[in-house]
Image (cartoon, rainbow, N blue to C red; front, side):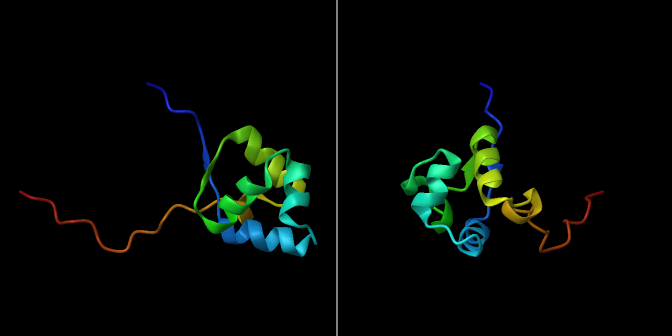
Amino acid sequence: MHQPTTYEVDGDAIREERMQAGLTQAELARQAGISPRYVSHLERGSRKDMRPKTYKRLREALNATDERLRRKAPRPTEDPPPERT
């Protein structure tokens, strides 16, 4: 079964951008066309994945960049295992 495309977002960045814009969660939610509860879940990190259309509305409401709101791929913390011969 095909999984829909989603974007993993950084809740801390969403909160910081919202506060910099001087918006409450309710105001951001209204501008982005989502619920205040959803904004709260995103900021707390209990929801991390967003569908593209919803993400785009949130990004536009915050006037933020993808680089700021989306999580970066995790960096490797260890070397790959040695190859077996």
